[in-house]
Image (cartoon, protein in one colour):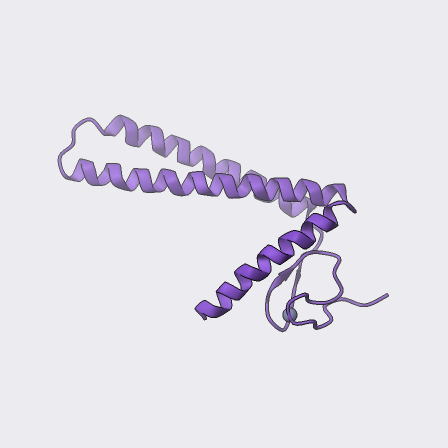
Length: 127
Ligand SMILES: [Zn+2]
């Protein structure tokens, strides 16, 4: 299974390359790529916030008295991030043409492709 995910990861890099190619064809795709980049930044920030919160809560448990303000600040900032992430996801859903998933290997494929670039199976009608 780990091997599978590693392969998917490698494939994702390749698909990233393909996605770059595809963006030349569609302004919407450029927008989606930007939004996804934004999303990954927000998610990373969220992760950092939650880790920070965990550390602060533990400090409080151990008796630190001056962490409440910081906990509050981080909670507020995390709630804002959650809203932003939701909004970005909605924008992506609006822009994203139906994304394809290979029925064979379950890899997400860039929209517009006719064959899975992972296993080569046909995923859309060839016109
Ligand atoms: Zn496939």
